[in-house]
Image 1 (spheres, each protein chain N blue to C red):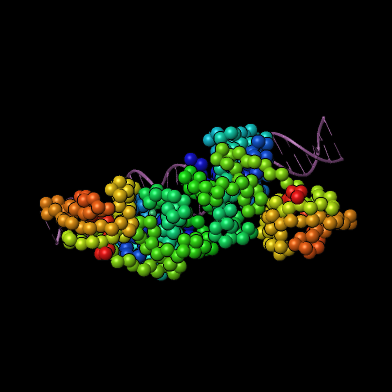
Image 2: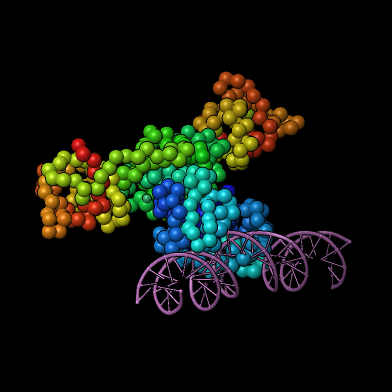
Length: 218
Length: 218
DNA sequence: ATATATTTTTAGACTTGTCTAAAAATATTT
DNA sequence: AAATATTTTTAGACAAGTCTAAAAATATAT
Ligand SMILES: [Mn+2]
Ligand SMILES: [Mn+2]
Ligand SMILES: [Mn+2]
Ligand SMILES: [Mn+2]
């Protein structure tokens, strides 16, 4: 039995070290979870005790095979619920995260598998992030940051790196959504901003925004 | 903010005293929740402190207006989720309770209202129990225990009083479901068992089963 | 009306998860 | 290679929710 709090720590370690394989620092976890380093130390000991994490004092944490599957399962649930909320319950992509943060902890194998089927076994969540399968495996989607694209290139919006409310709402405002066709027209040497054509309108995307938007070449 | 544990207590009080209007005893709550009386006393003080319950030492608990709405909202969520699981995710009516017990605590007004709309504003859950509306009001459905029906009468199965797994699985076994047409043929004076015709087969229903099945006259 | 039984509350302890403040280990500078 | 800065851990405290055992209040029986 893995508690709600343990699940949140597993998820943080999973996200910080590539799928939990890399060791991550106590402070990094504390920052990600908005908690204190001392709390992290305590919890990490419990995770190690339960064979979910590898932990050596002063040397960071990584996930065991078991811990990695547990973490991936939480991520799977989070992303399936996010997609459910957008596709079936009329949520906007900037409204789903907090609710999914709760739903991801509901325990029922049947629930998650039936939800998966109900959504027709999706591969990505509403932010373009991959949904792990039952065994925790993800199929990496090929995606490049908009900032890396050289003009002139046609591409398609496939995801966001930063999925904060503010950024998602900005994208809504400029009419950018997953699947939107984008033409990269020009790049301003002065501030690295990018001029794109989106639904026939030319708009300017700041370097910071271009650094948080994933595209694939058309 | 109402905690998960508080919500469970509110629900118990709501169910035990008709919608929480009647005072219920510490022991009754403890039994319903499979906990100890001393734990109930502690929690009931907290509910009173938060103006969710009326509590006088040694004299039981009832809900305040605020507590009643909070409890009804949890019941609303529980029953909407149960219906979702049956209607959309292929759960059987005997499999939904434990999952709904978790889902009922997810906090999001939008979630529950959208779920309500997605299910087309249902009035009843998969066990024939009424679903409270946003304001906590329920529309009582007219229903009589099968044991109260005099032969010969045609009626329809509309709900269960006892929704334990065992009873629900028994009903599955005899092919009884919500909406099933039933003809009450005879009542055995010796053991109060009831002979009914269900999908053209005559079967015998024990007094104890007949006392847990709701019907309405056709 | 008193004795007995039952119910309810209190007192004190324990677990989980968190925090602050101080100590210990590791990293970085000079 | 010290000295200094940073990171991490430990020690001790606290809140929420639960439990056991004992005390207090209420209900029931004689
Ligand atoms: Mn999310
Ligand atoms: Mn239920
Ligand atoms: Mn519950
Ligand atoms: Mn039900």
